[in-house]
Image (cartoon, rainbow, N blue to C red; front, side, top):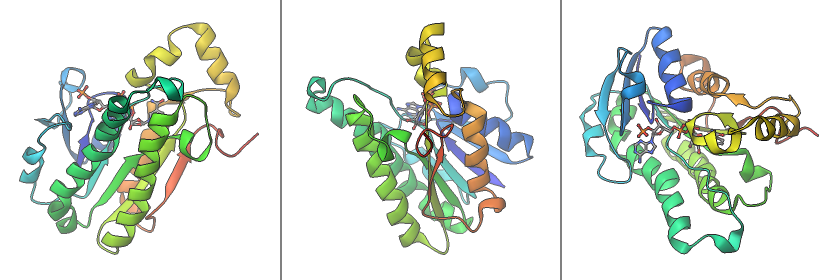
Length: 227
Ligand SMILES: NC(=O)c1ccc[n+]([C@@H]2O[C@H](COP(=O)([O-])OP(=O)(O)OC[C@H]3O[C@@H](n4cnc5c(N)ncnc54)[C@H](OP(=O)(O)O)[C@@H]3O)[C@@H](O)[C@H]2O)c1
């Protein structure tokens, strides 16, 4: 099977890349850099999703697209500028929309599947998360809308992780005190590993997930549902 991982060079996307390769799949990674995956047997396409993504047009068929770029900018609501809200929306939502539009013919040809990323902070209100929650809320709506529009040919699902140890979350886990407080907040008493999230993403894009569409699945150590 052939999969495109946008943002497959670090964090959760890199874990998806590694797992798909382990399972014998062909993987194309699109990102701005490839230093962390230069040892892996993938095709690399240099893309900044904030700009032109037309180089992603070149694939004939795709069995799956996983879109990973995203942000966690946390601060009190009144301290976000209009431009900051828009910047989060561009990366989290418009980037995903552009990549899906560009790859849709290949996804249709490959009976493919799309996985997007939300956050636990959409279904569970969390202080200081207004910008990321607004953008990821849009991702959840997009997921269900496209799942309906593209069925039965292309499946669309999203994963809503809680705090996961990746470069994006570095500042939130930068010392023992912060890490322990985060672990304590989760019912399962640890933060996520990139592999926890990647195994769900790979399940969703593979044949194992072939009867799942329009879902937003929490992979969150119990954070969204369990007291
Ligand atoms: N980590 C968490 O705690 C957490 C929690 C909830 C939700 N999420 C969501 O899960 C998703 C994956 O998160 P992560 O923690 O794995 O993020 P990450 O560590 O920042 O990795 C993001 C990936 O996207 C690429 N990327 C970033 N900006 C890009 C751009 N403008 N153009 C092209 N590629 C770009 C990065 O590669 P380059 O830098 O090489 O371009 C990298 O491969 C995100 O949508 C995030 O919002 C994460």
